[in-house]
Length: 140
Image 1 (cartoon, helix red, strand yellow):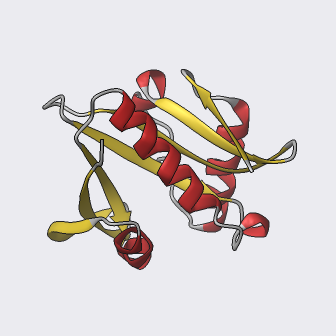
Image 2 (image 1 turned 120 degrees about the horizontal axis):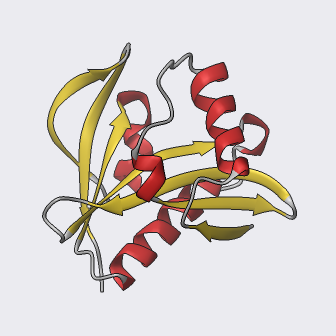
């Protein structure tokens, strides 16, 4: 699995997010202004796009926000999500970030807990789906 970094929203990331969040999960509002300034990562299985995520600097400067973690259905089970998360965390730490924060779908929170994230706050809804904020202290 190879991961490429983009400073813009590439077509492969757009495609993956449309498939996972809009078609598969039924979200309506997927793309936003954050896409214009976030760093986008795309994982490739050979030349085939498999998964994506984005990250950007939070308001306090020490925290970066990871989001839109998505892996195509036929590419799941190959640790693509974990690889993307690890690479995002590595790049964030390299950029001086001390913490990674994300908004997890409650159904995916166990995946993030296994990656070292801790739940913070109460469950809230994004569109129709329950989410929870999660935070991880990054290693240098």
